[in-house]
Image (cartoon, rainbow, N blue to C red; front, top):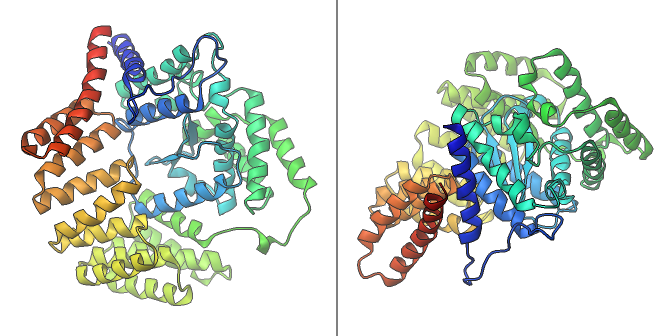
Length: 481
């Protein structure tokens, strides 16, 4: 059965690349040909998007808009000082306590929430992301492919999804030896050393402490040797021999040391760390005791983050008055911090203060137009306040900027259903299913939309075009399987 699924997936992927067309009706760039030495940039992009949709069909993705916003902002800041040519990134945050991050072809960066639980400061998290960006900028995936048949090797990558789908374990894609030989995650020793060097330079250019990369990887290595290997998926896919750690130390030592206060270390990292801890620890009372112990710290970042964590823990316990007191105190001490202001909006939502949430959300968006976190939360406030049409309008505008974000389409479909816009409800659901690799479900939704489109000529044409794209893939799949 697994072999049959494997060949079906490969056949599907092959037909996808042959059948796909761009908006101008011309063939998309192919992955490669027998005379080329690697996959093209556009081919990597197409490969990555297909892989991501299939991965999302089995992965448990975390939907906290604030963590996602923070990570995207950090990634784009780091990419400004990187050598990545194609910056059409896609980011996926996984609900997994193990320590892992990965880069896949076409600008895809994945990170487990466990990475927040292990890192101690922003520079350490940034060092891991810089390493993954280096794999992308140096195109290690394309360079690793067989010179005689890069397309065949690329399709093997997509076939590895079967391992995860059959076992219901998304991490199988990342750690299975056969899959690792094909994925952009397990590179040669020279690839890893190059990613260390390029990533280190990226980290320093971005303003972080050069020692952060060494401290992060050294601590992971030490713990990896003393704990269950399952907790450290990252080191299973990024082995760290001693010479690589030595090279990192030499690079850091060769640079002139600056005042530690001059290095970048955003307080928002520590706030996101607390959000990850709240997700990880089900016992809010246990966290309340821990955070209260750290409120006497003389370190501002520890003090602020623990006060924030305490507010979140009180929110989990529905002790809203205590949570409001702490959040408002933090905002007074740290004015203009968008995370804290958005957290106040989130707290109003949890407490059922929908009018206050709407007022605050609209005020934030006047300054931070279409900020992802605020827009998502404001739309939720509208929905809870029986203003679905306003939520729909807000999310529809957001979907124009985030066309490949399944979370936006999912929420937009919900708003459209509540506002009575059933035609667009089906179209939004179809977009969600396409992005999460469920093509049969997408076809069903598009057919329902088509039946409701009546005399809306442009809408019907758009639906028919999208159906034709999916049917072309399904026909090729049927013929090849």
